[in-house]
Image (cartoon, rainbow, N blue to C red; front, top):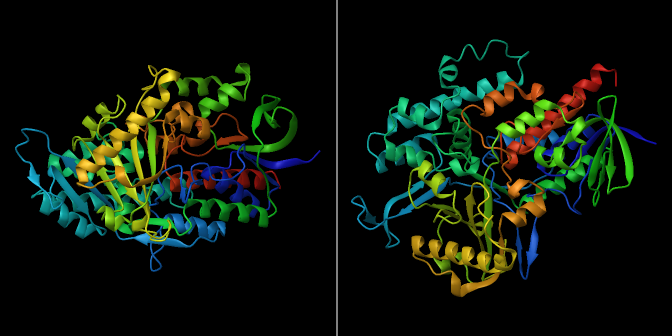
Amino acid sequence: MKNYDVIIIGAGNGGLAAAATCAKAGLSTLLLERHNIPGGSASSFVRGRFEFEPSLHELCGVGSPEKKGDVEDMFIRFGGDVDWLTHDSTFRLVVPAKEGDKDAFVNEDGVRVTVDARMPVGFKPFAEKLEELVPGSYESCMKAFELSAKLFRAFDALDKPKKLVGSIKDLPDIMRMVSHTMKEALDALGMPKKAQDIFNTYWCYMGSPASKFDFLYYLTVLHCYVENGTGIPKLRSHEMSLALDKVIRDAGGEIWYNSEVTRVIMKNGKPAGVVINGGKEVYGRYFICNSSPNTVWADLFDEKDIPEKQLKMLDTRKIACALTTVYLGMNRTKEELGITDYSVFIAPDSDSDKQYEAAQNYFSGYCIINCLNEIIPDCTPEGTCQLFLTTMTFGDVMKDVEPKDYKKFKNKVARDMIKTCEKALNISIMPYIEEIEVALPPTFARYLNTPRGTPYGYMLEKWDSMIPRTVQYLQDQPFDNFFFCGASQERGDGYGCAYYTGEKAGGLVVKALEKEGK
């Protein structure tokens, strides 16, 4: 029986990156996936004339032909052929006014709002726009971006300590910011509160609000968006998944679809193989897992084989947010609908902590509306467009929804989200819907096989942020031949983050086998 150098569990973004890294290094590589297609969230489904993606679909690290970003650099290293499109935009934040709001004004859409911020690409233009919206914020914004430029050197030092020994100590500004939250750091920089709220708009992409989330990590994400704008593969995210599928196969790796790992085989106290679909056994020397640790320990291991430290980690870490997405195929163009932005964040309050508190219940009025046609005009048939409406929730918000009420509940949430977008943007959506699909947390739980359907892994908090997780990465792995990758790891959610963790885990296996004389 063939004994593989490395077996990768799960062909999500992290697993694909890990398998590509290992196969290109000449290792005998087997990638196992329970679905019939690769990519996890980076895939697609069809309803009528429209092709949708399961998740949000933009990347902040693509860059431009003149200056490639981290994501495109990774795909160059992988050898994956992807046709990238970029859009010169970051986000628009709209906060509709409530009755009695003293600072309300009527925006260009004819809606009473307290905030309407279209933020541009480029550090200086971004800071200038913030200054226009909130006088007195320019200097603190530019100081933040100066820190983010230094920060990338610190990350290199963490990931390549032998190459850059001592370089973290050479960055006192970064050392002072480690373990500070967004709120603490922006207060220290002197940024006005209203400017902070706009600056922190992307908090939901990481799933932790300003009082809880690591400032340095948030800064890297915002830096990439402001420097590079938004990037998307021309054939959408499934193009990335299929590109990596080809890389793996061309390098001699094997991919088995419809092959669910149902148990891990232990030998001498560590993994030695896996059982597929409850029957076939396959053996390997190293393992990389692109699945949620909660699911892995509950379903694939006997309790006696789970390291105690892993159980303690599950007890201390909080499951991150879950998503609800409404997919809309519209029988009108975006121009006919009056949609002028790719990504609009509609919030009941500009403060991220208040948004977080409201998201402990089901739909709080927080909604992101994306129009893919803004970046890929021909992604739908002529005369149409597609919209994605997304909201997030924390905790088991569906615990009181009875199965018999599920459909009614789902339809109500979709209607509420659509009405929120219609009112905030002064547009009409409901009469022009040709196709609609609604995915609640149980939908994502079935598809992603994660607790409560979260695509985010665990909440990144002050005590458990990216830098501590990065420093502790090897110590946090359960066995010396078994590594996790994906959203549960140090960088949390996001396609680019998942590819990074997969490449890192794959690189560790390559180095380990080199030491063994492979």
